Length: 532
Image 1 (cartoon, rainbow, N blue to C red):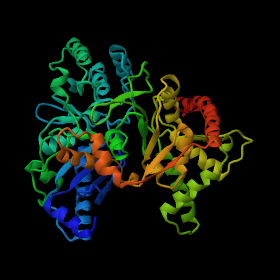
Image 2: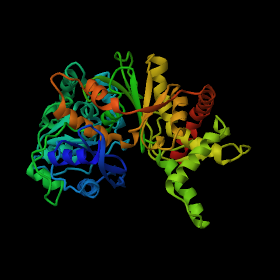
Image 3: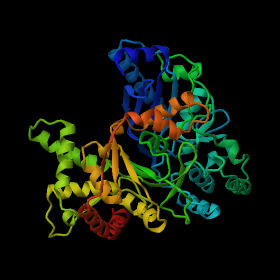
Image 4: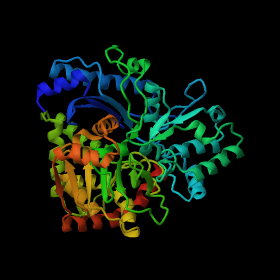
């Protein structure tokens, strides 16, 4: 689309804006009527460990989103000479799960407990047995029930429990709703009804009665919406909250708030059965859209949904690129100390390409990237570590290959359950996130780890914010009974290409050999937690 047509789209409001709250970055992406990104803005932020809880302050939520929006609007102004005053549709997404809770006066009762907190083991175990359905520690319902089990002071005053995406949407529209994909990380979903599973709701209400709490579950958690459903409009107060300059107009149609898992599926066009995607950034998770329900219940597998409610098996790991990034920064400090000038992208590419040269099994070097705990390997807290036997040489290629392997090793353990125990078949995985920024390396090693072809689209760098913008566009553009899958195939991804790398047999064998040692070495990681 040429510049003149883009300007017309902006001036006539034929655009859609998606904003996603990632773990380390808030990103805003504006798309034109052809669904291509035309402007973006971002804001870096970090969670904090306060009193043993990983959290973000709600003030930082608004400062961050205002900054991201302002930078996106400035991008529009600088590139197209137009002042942004409205968009055709708007939507927000965020890292899933966690616990944000308010009383009847809309006062926050406890600090935001993010997905990163592995503090709900008792609640998750009890609910998994009660429902015969895996409830991970990250899920909102696990946080709520753990607070009840702990007899925390605030539970008697609860009036609203939501997620980060649900909170932002509520403040901007007044609507207490979630998209079904995001809702599936709050409480189990009945895919036939695209709503919370009623039998499980009633079972949980029984727990509330036993604990003499003055509310039922549906009274305090958001209502569920399907992709494309009416989710309200941006209010006057919401417009000022998003854009304090007052230039943004109210009345913009809003899409249902979604989670980063759902927007990742949309951004990679993996919402149909036998498709999957892997998102690799601060955390790593893989989503497999299922042809049928799983036969078993596995604590390593989350059952969530697409933004239209189709069942999805999700393997989520808390740790991915953070420790690798730390090592890259350390090498950068070495260069700086030597007076060597370098660019950060070149440093990343150089180290990733070194990983490509390393021995297929990393030559005996093991790396555990656990900044925080991992439930899949039953490690309660983070203790990043690199270890090797005394006779193993420490070389850069093997060291960096071990760092890249570490980003996907825990994911491999969970995905093998799907492949080996449930015989799930995927035609391909679509990769997105920071791990895939360097050409070929992360993609080829992920293909080896999953023993499945991995595709990276030309749009992979846009990520979840672009996926949320597409969901917003779908909400206002869908025609009749047009499905989200048809909308993406016929109106969006027909314009984009991707590159696919099939697994190399030698890499597959090397990764499997590495994993045999890695699984045994988890005991070292657990010992580090106990003793250090």
